[in-house]
Length: 454
Image (cartoon, rainbow, N blue to C red; front, side, top):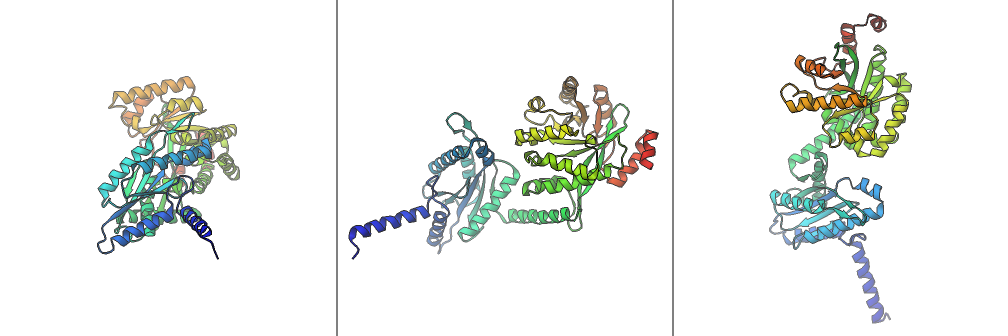
């Protein structure tokens, strides 16, 4: 016979196993199993009168880089501090759980509608934005949230979680620290994004993304000195899709490398037909500046095409550089060693442009159109441009003013000493054939034009 002490021991063991099955071992919070049981309990209690309740998911923004930088022990400490804060601020009767990685979830029985969910989300966002103490340093993080409300967004735990994840995904797409409550409109928006993604993947595979070229001119004589390559996509079913839509989508879904490589190949092949004095300017994404293989990939494409690296200028933004500064520094150094020139794009719009000029070696900067468009109407913009030009002269950096729309802007910039300009005043982006025609009509060196015509 089993003695009473043995029965008690077995009972304790079973209780411990059950507790383990329902508990996150790192933070002590409940896990997905605990959340499912809570949702089932509330649903059963309200079966006869299905009053709404809310599920929420919170995800830390950019937690992985912090984890990589300071190590997994520091990352675990942050997650434990997050759990402590969340446990302390949820209302009575609510549940907070930890799911995978840096994702936490809530079951909120007394939140019935959108406004209350958004208000709760704002409170959580504020709580999680306070510094995290890692002993010898403090770290700050933001958080994004997604909510779904029963029964409108689903009638069981899995449906509600899926809807909350859809809302969270939309928050992530909108930037850091965003809050989204699921709705049918949001679901349709996400569905369209998925359809767009699939169409874009197919367009890349079928080589259907085009490259157009916009001239960059010397302001002293209006002569073309190079072209910037710009992506264009005209889908048979979707029609024209703005690069402001499909390029961020490719970055977000993780296939910007494939898109960029296809575009660089096409652009370099087209530029082989230009006079050899003209350069090709091409944009690198933030994702590419975080990939150590970018420099070898770029140089490999140029080698296969037979395009001289000295004729290529790669444009990068300050935000892209800041995403992974050490990796970006190595990529830039490798490319410059091969003869590729580097331009800092959208200069003046970042938070620490002067610091980037000190820490990185650039060949050129491009003044953002936000300043250029107001050069004749806003004295502050004019003085900012003057200061940029003076600084670049001292640093021996070339300068391109972007977004020049009319003659008056071009004249003012030339008077201020700006070397190069780009914008609709000098030419709109055009495909490869139209670009060659533009060169025949606008490139003035007759000896060069003999080579163009040949």
